[in-house]
Image (cartoon, rainbow, N blue to C red; front, side, top):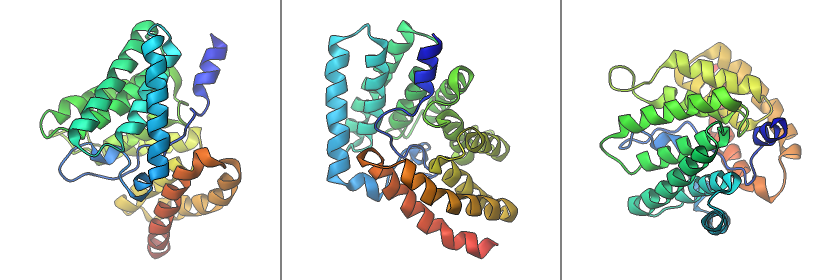
Length: 261
């Protein structure tokens, strides 16, 4: 059991730049998923499609294999990002939700199952104009469950994701948005996985939104020092898409960091 927990706490394969702090205007949860320049690459799309089809085939054959179930859920989340229509995104997200739900039937305490269920719920929410609040609450519940089981999934992804959910969701009584809760979880993600650029970027972007000059200076300096070091460690084709994203975002905030000092 300890070995399984250790494996699930390791970076999950086919890393993706998940949960950037971007708010969609018309859909309450659009901010939770990637939606930029790097996603447009045919190469990245082809990789995600291949992973989706491969993992789907495996899951269809191995219905009682918990590993096959949650890995297909992860592949669904990634592939849904390339959907051209809401109908396509909803269909893929529903497959991911079903796969993760199956994984949790097989093993209720599976952190990765709860985590990718939350992310696929986020993809589903992007297709909705009504009923999004209910999905927000489901996501919050699943991310909290992941934290209780294994907060280190996807480089402290549950804290990062929950922090961004609180950061960008409307506040009470409309939804669950909370600056205080957002800060707690974004800072916790950095504490748990300080060498992962996504965590530092998300916290820095939040501090810029809050105009927190002291934190902007601290996080900006830390991120500037981290990026060259991380580039040597997080290298290779699997990280290519992340670096397109991270470099673009760092370039975007670097000038603001200097201005706010």
